Image 1 (tube, rainbow, N blue to C red):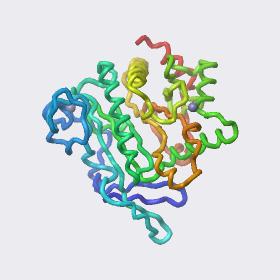
Image 2 (cartoon, rainbow, N blue to C red):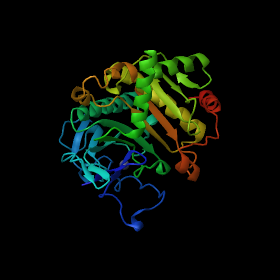
Image 3 (cartoon, rainbow, N blue to C red):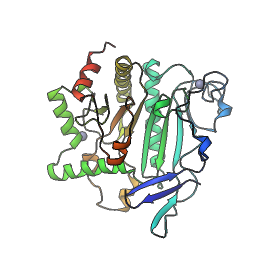
Image 4 (cartoon, rainbow, N blue to C red):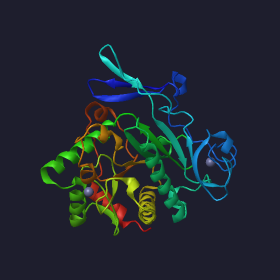
Length: 342
Ligand SMILES: [Zn+2]
Ligand SMILES: [Zn+2]
């Protein structure tokens, strides 16, 4: 069973994932990703080589064989385990709890060599629908506080298999990075009675120097204080707190927008390794337990996607201080990305 241990000085939880690599020789650095065909457990026809299917969108009804378009399975080496209770306890000065949660893999397509922006728009929309479905499903579990969906592209971004896939992790505590964003949003709302993200989006649309692309529904911009070169954020232009509140028509538009943004990044930076992650609203059942705790969440929070190209390495100064040094001003990054022909 993985374990969550609390660092009382940094005030964060760390997952000690015992099922993963543990011996020094188990850590290989930026190895090549395995090839396709027979080796790849995510390829069509190799369904038996993954843990059992949790959910799939299928053309051919079948239980856990071929015929799928998007397929969700448990991670074979989960960071957190679905069984058990939190059992939060003190260990001397320290705090710990069982590493319960969910860790799922969303296999985006049966085709090994088709990356997300190469898929037909309907298939990207189907992936967005699966994101929505996994968020809704996992939020029902009262043990989980936060559901994060992310995508690692390229070995340098942490992908261990080349076959296009996303991951979902449900955590039993609100992650610190998310908690800071939630708190800033709530405090802004308390003072101004406006959503901080809506305010930012309006200003970015007005100044336009950091906007990469915008349509009637979504905007992508390079954040004012970007940590990384070519960092981007995507958000709906109309206020919406929960990613899962999007209807099918919206998800189709999001698929189109996301494809364009990834293509711009691919062309401008020669298909860089990147991570993207979705910051949606936290699970809501906890608010019932703490009445009045977060009544304004639907007004103060605004879901968004962060896209982080991995062009620079995080080194001693960043680890030691939490400062980032970004060599590309976001205004320049946005101009490069805007000028790309897609
Ligand atoms: Zn494959
Ligand atoms: Zn908003």
